[in-house]
Image 1 (cartoon, helix red, strand yellow):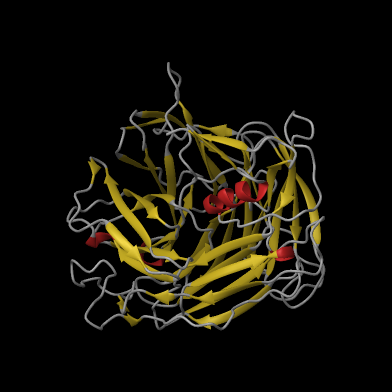
Image 2 (tube, one colour; image 1 turned 90 degrees about the vertical axis):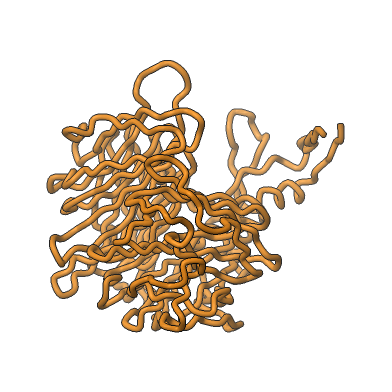
Length: 523
């Protein structure tokens, strides 16, 4: 038996390797749990965010908006927050609006020079923040724009968020593609991907560190694991990004599949860019970690179709109840009362226009029965519009907000915030920051009834100009899950994107220094 004694700094570093948070700083504290002062909640001191390559289309533009909320108990002077370009590990990347007919064995989707030229990295900072509480924004041409690796420390670290919003004006990928830049991790689930001929799905892998990362990609369809056509292990060089076309990983075609991304060494950021030949494109973020209860918040009231995709990663099948939480109560969608998901297989059901003109959220809970409930991952593909004027977006299963979460890049028009309380009622405070061009923050408090969804236009900053951020704080009551929809109608196409709002992990509970930090490591 080996006994390893970890200092507080050592324990914090171990936590950082998992969560993307590198250190803690002293500040305000409160008691955690029932153990008196056995632990202290402190603001994080360092955060890392990764933004994927936005687009290779020549008719696209991207807006980046960065923001850190003001926090009590944080040093008011020290700290920086900025992003730097990442190197692109591929020489050429297929344009997502193209035909995708590249070399079958070329995972990056190279197409003999017909795709967009890969962007090179650099050392010029992007979006450096000057003060918490005020967002900064910039617009760039997406063609040739690199992926970004960002770091915030000191007063800018707690709750730091960056929103990437891309508009593609024409082609099969036209629409709004939005994503919140994500923290690095080692394991991601993406239910809702596709290897079908009508879809081009790229998983973007970004390595923020100075050593190469070894990554495994595994696809699961309705009958189980999809047979691999190539080596599933991929090396992502240091401080680089690599797009991988999923249809090059297998010869099997699946309309709905699930992707697991696992870093065997190092850590990465992973997001999927899904392009539908008929219904536009958007980013598919990873699902929340496997859970026996699932919340998918923020289905638009005018959704013309919704496709639910669920995967059971464990050794047991999952039997789930399906409910729609609307503005007034929860109901069971007609004909879709339950869903059986076999172990290691992807299940999908088409819910049609499930919201029937009212906003809602999907709730999945275990069917009654003996034994423990089976954890699952899930996502919803939502379509608005009809015929040639369709646009699509994705909502993954979303973890509850423990304390606060933020959506940046809200506009004067077109932003809708959705809140769902699956069980008990909850009280939340919603704060609109100052605008990037000035103004003053505005806060409002709302009640969300248990088993319902509250969809609202978020408050706007007083005399605000430019994009602004919206922060949701859970004040009391039961769990709350949230998402934000940003919409823009162009040439009759209801373009939109939806970002889920998990907790920002701006604070973390740390044992007091006087506690016994000994951990046993048995050989």
